[in-house]
Length: 181
Image 1 (cartoon, one colour):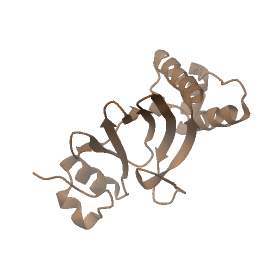
Image 2 (cartoon, one colour; image 1 turned 90 degrees about the vertical axis):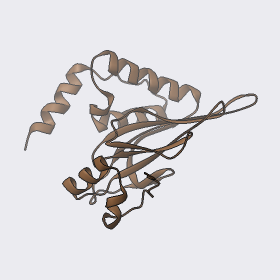
Image 3 (cartoon, helix red, strand yellow; image 1 turned 135 degrees about the vertical axis):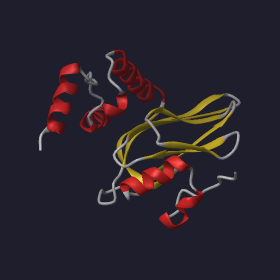
C-alpha cells in the first residue's frame, strides 16, 4: 500500500490515511498536527525528544511524519553538522493546537503549533535537555509538564537567569488546576 499522503490532506481524502489517523480524525473532528522528522547520517538529525504521536508515517529511509492530536505536547530537536563538526543545535517544545487556538507557523510543522520554548545553540539546548532528563528522573512524563514551565524556561534563558527545576509539588499543582471546572 502506498501511503504517501500530504499533511495538508483534508477529511475528503481521509480514506488514504492510515487507520489510526482516520480514527483520530473522525473521533475528534479536529485537524491533526503533522511534524516532519528526518535523519541523514552523519550530517543531519531532526528527531522527537519526547511526545506521543498518534501515528508515524514513514516516507522513505530518511524521512517520516509524526501525527499528533490537538493539545499534545512534544519536543523536536534539530542537529546539523558539516565535515568540521556541529554547526547547529535547535530545540523546540510545542503544543499541537485545536482549531480555535492561535498557532505559529513553524518550518516542518503543518498546519502550525503553539511554540512554548525555542532555544538555539549548544549550551542552551544542553541545559534544557538536562532539565528534561531531571523531569524524567522524577518519574514525570515531559509531555505532561505544565506549558507554563516551558514558557518560564524560555524567558529565563532569554534573560540569562538560573533555570528552575520542575518539582513534584509544581506538577501536582498543575494537575490539580486542570481538574477544576
